[in-house]
Length: 151
Image (cartoon, rainbow, N blue to C red; front, side):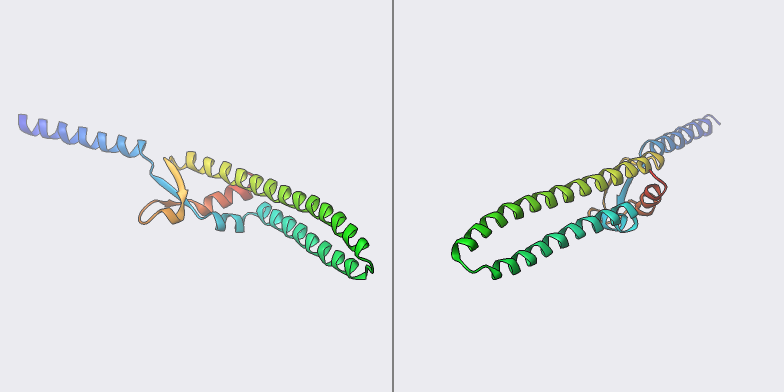
């Protein structure tokens, strides 16, 4: 009888300890960042804006090439090249700045949504899906839902 009580107490402690360990360790979540971007309307809009700016830059170069071909003297061509180079540098800098701002904005929003899912799901960490070989919890769709609902 005494051994039975001791066995029950040990079993009860084991179950309690097992349950507490599971409550503390939530596990690892993983996310497919490209899929999140594809399902996030703000990210798609940002990509369209950056692509439009790139096309604008390409069109600028095409127009300048036509203007260059119309010039008749080497001095005019040289002056045109210098002016165009300065203008092109300014446009490229603006493009790079816009692209960087949009990428940072999208990343920050996705990260904020992922943090909310991390807390809700009681996860220990979230990693890129390419890092996971076996196991983990896919939270990609949950992050997309958070983003669509306004984080």
